[in-house]
Amino acid sequence: MQLARRLDQLPPYLFLEISRKIAEKRAQGVDVVSFGIGDPDLPTPPHILDELKRTADDPANHRYPETDGLPALREAIAAWYKRRFGVELDDKEVVPLIGAKEGIGHMALCLTDPGDVALIPDPAYPVYAAGTMFAGGTAHLMPLREERGWLPDLSAIPADVAERAKVIWINYPNNPTGGLATPEFFEEVVAFAKEYDIVVCHDAAYSEVTFDGYVAPSFLQTPGAIDVGIEFHSLSKTYNMTGWRIGMAVGNATLVDALVRVKSNLDSGIPQAVQYMGIEALEHTAQEWHDANNEVYRRRRDRVVDVLRTIGLDVTTPKSGLYVWARCPEGWTSAEVATALLDEHAVVVTPGRGYGEAGEGYIRLSLTTPDDRVEEGLRRLAGWRLPQRPA
Ligand SMILES: *Cc1c(COP(=O)(O)O)cnc(C)c1O
Image (cartoon, rainbow, N blue to C red; front, side, top):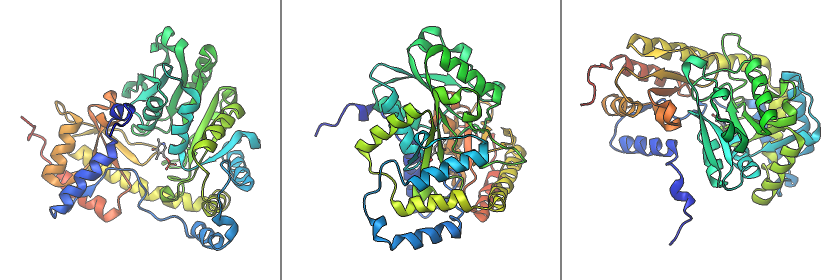
């Protein structure tokens, strides 16, 4: 059998590899604690599940949905953007997605022809690069560095690369680094995009998972952003809904229309009962619920940061997201740390290298593990002795 060459270009999907390793250990009877994938352990709120139950019996919801979703869902998304960010969107500027991941992958097909350049952060959520590769494009990586607050240095992009680039991907609050965007940075991105005629794709999947009073901006609050950009959002992390697969893209109407055209040829939309869950989530989730949900992650974050510092790792306390991004001990690669922790303590962390070359030297710990397992993992981490450096 001959498979397409593009499959050979695909790096192993990071979390598949890790899941395989965990399964192997568990089959050997090892009690593994995972700080690996970011997938909320907390349940979807009951009022949202009730909406699924209410709508599941209606045969109208058993049929093919429209690719661009129920008008009521698009309205609920627009109303949420207005309430949350003060951003006004009309119906042509909104499209629901089968999760942000789906939209990001398909958006690459809208923007990248073979040979085109896409500007992609490094480290990054792997889907920007995977989508670019599937579309035949070439990634120009923008390293994210701690000393720049994990913001790319746009002035370091060579002019001839910027001239050829069709799209710039950015993601704030950032996964995996925890970096935050300032309004000034977003303004700089809009100016850069206008100068070089580049589309801006902003991934805002973590805007609602925030701590210590931090409120994340939308890229679309930036003057001129709607002329050049589209923002991807997700109900996954915001409402503990990763398993239901629902998100949205909002922004420039031409970009939204392009995405709908690609999607309508490849998928048939979000199951309608799940769309009703989305409407319910966006319209009727109390701020107190968000506060309580984020408080669970904040407590875990503080515990993890505390223990990592105790064992001598350098870590900045993140104000957003589901992850702690910690610097590896001097002289260790991220894979060496991850392997040592798994083999010696049955603790899973993600090597930063898996998010790109510039992620080397860091590990990521996800906070989406139940409290008692977090404590068990931390107990083991606290016993980790750094001098056992690999030969
Ligand atoms: C989790 C995540 C997503 C995916 O969200 P879905 O809506 O579940 O597909 C997108 N972007 C980033 C940065 C993420 O971490």
